[in-house]
Length: 141
Image (cartoon, helix red, strand yellow):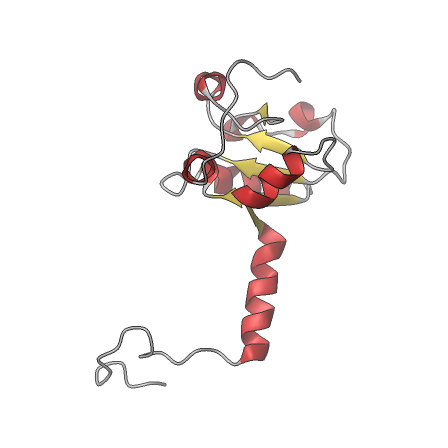
């Protein structure tokens, strides 16, 4: 165990993991997460092969959402509300952003129902930070 008291550099006070462990860790993250840039690229050339799920309230959704998203608040995720989607459909969930855990809650619900799921890290906040635009109005789906 490194001596955390004697180091004066917070970056290196805990040594980096060996490359093999780092590779395993970061590949595992990509199994669970995607980012705004990748979602944007996918939505620019529809049809895309995942269900983009905005898990915020309908009111927030109407005022601005990612193009191609459908709205299903995380508390309403259940088998009945997912019945129109293939059992193996990948869901990409997002919420307001890093200050909210709605996407995590949605991912838990989807995983409990046996559905493949990834989280779009950053949520709406990240989307806007990247300079991408939102659509307004209700979901067409």
